[in-house]
Image (cartoon, rainbow, N blue to C red):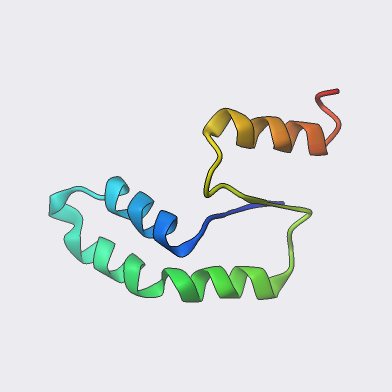
Length: 73
């Protein structure tokens, strides 16, 4: 399992960009619980790889993942 993380500010910014105005209730729910969800996932310790995506783009995340699993040199 690969867990993607980010700093709290980045997570909240990304969540706000993911939900439309008509989904405000869902956004509020997620914003209120995102720290708890992240802590639970970390505590579960089920990850083979954890990548902090705070400053990475999608291609960089994919490259790190593929490299970790030996699919890139």
